[in-house]
Amino acid sequence: QVQLVESGGGLVQAGGSLRLSCAASGRTFSNYRMGWFRQAPGKERDLVTAINWNGGNPYYADSVKGRFTISRDNGKNTVYLQMNSLKPEDTAIYYCAARRIINRDYDYWGQGTQVTVSS
Image (cartoon, rainbow, N blue to C red; front, side):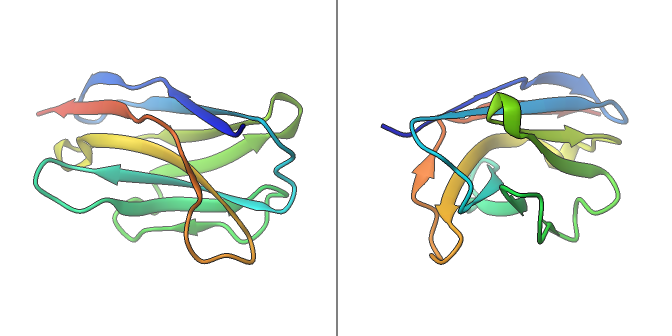
């Protein structure tokens, strides 16, 4: 059974940094694309960044370009989201997700981790 477990959220001041981790288990992810989504109160869940498990085809939403970096450690089966220069508008629940590269929709989701950026 596929499991995605996020960690690393918390409270940080504006301008600070956080690194989120997503530990993936339950299958081989070599043909998968991994994404980080976020959902702020009263808003839809949006894709923030994504990358293929082999490191190809990275994507970043315009709002996070130059500040956030997605990476993965194949040996640890873990995907990371390094968030720098955080802004109050980055406050949200952050979710890790996975889908087969050939699919459009994400099939597997983590439970989410709260990120709060104070001004």
